[in-house]
Amino acid sequence: MIALDQRLSDMKNLTSAEVKTLSANFLRNQFRKGQLLLTPGQNLHGLYYIESGFVQGYITHNYIDETIWVKDGGSFLLLPGLFNQETSHHYIEFLTDATACMLNLDPLLFPDASNHHLLYKLLQQVYDQEMLLSEKREYINHLPQAKDRYQLFKAEFPGIIGQVNNHIIASLLRMSLKHFVRLKSADL
Image (cartoon, rainbow, N blue to C red; front, side, top):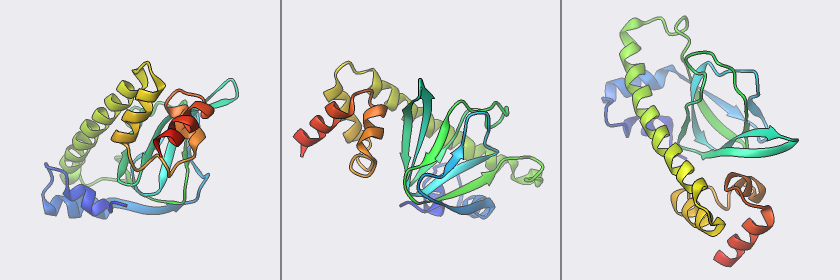
């Protein structure tokens, strides 16, 4: 678990006063395992930070859930449609009980124009970090061998394997549950 204040403090472009101002504008909420944060046709109006717990993004295709991503505590959720109000095509579900903080980005609810530069600085850092994570996930999922995908995912995201259900990780890594369990068992 990485507290929001610590995560913001770790950002290179924010001063301690800016961290304090931003942190004061996040609202902390508790979520239960299985609770949906987003469903197709909806959009989020804020930037979410997962302080503790696990969350997944998935789509349903031919009645089968296909995991797109899994994130753990210490992760921001920067999702398409955040600024242009495009609706989602996927679900966001909490895999465990979790604590998440939300910064409402609706300009009507964040009227103090003097703080808009802070939003820009925050979103710039989050966007850069999310792009790097996205590139890692894409690289992993383009490896032709399932064993290589498993090994690299385990190395890059060590906190997820063992904490999230096997079928979710298998879906994320584009392999059958049987094959994933075999790889995981051989690795123990």
